Length: 412
Image (cartoon, rainbow, N blue to C red; front, side):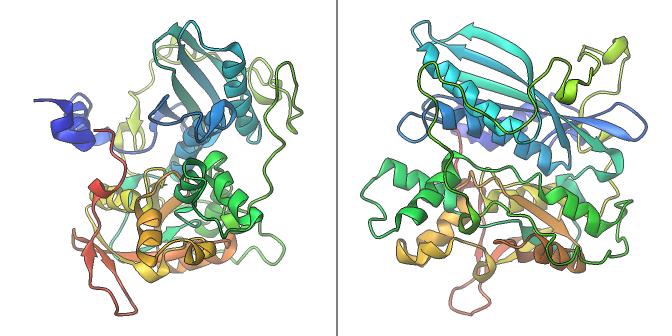
């Protein structure tokens, strides 16, 4: 039997047999470091020709996207980023300028969140490959997992979906979207080339859920006018940054310089096997140390593999179903001028790489969250006590259909 015959999900099921069943399935592994704090760890690999190419991203934006993907995984777990390591595989004749631009792109993204590159590895390879491991910190009672959803909870998408897919189409097919304004074209391309991990959503979540983050907490009052930030949606995107640097150039990033020992010069203990000082911490787990579910009234993951994928994965991990209303899914307004309604829905559900968060939480909390973050955030459905995951239509035009994993991107 070949890998292509069982597909990506089939391969993952085989690999999960080598891990404790109760600790796999989230965006990060989580390791207890103190009674109240855990270390969140995630690794993403990117391969030239699969995840990036000079046709659509180039080295600078490939580096940005690589960093953003890992930071998005940390955000999906409720974790604050601490540092990353980078393993780079390149051919001997790879241009040094390409490598420098890739790292400039990574650094530009990471410095927005005061996250340094603290090490890694370099090897020879016929295909450029990058593996990034990101480390974050999360309070034990604020760990967001996929397996914590409950029937009756609302499903929130923190921003519009499909923009990244549209940006990729514009980059690969210049004839597409000829009627777009330059501003609209640039905003869609930016959504693909320079996505923003939704770490900005976490403080709003904790404000709404309360300081303890316990299941069914009392609601806190809204943050008030003027407290909203400018979040990641095509309608609110800033103009692109100045072009990536040429040979020998320098770029001024508005954040503290990277220092040995971590952001701000803090000397973190070295990451070692068995933990700092050789202490043997509990095994790495996904969803919390020992596989224990967090008591926080929220479940979630990011939508890097598509909105449908995130909803399905959370439902499967939590043992619930869902009804998703196609009329509530947030898509860029400009889509009505360039693609059909059906294609817009397909790109929103299955296009991927929007790097928004998909969160399940009690309805009252969900309504407050959407109100506070705005800019494309929406309640798109509700969790059910069935295991079926349906795409419905509140307008009554389209029949109900099942959401499927195989409609999105799969490696095999």
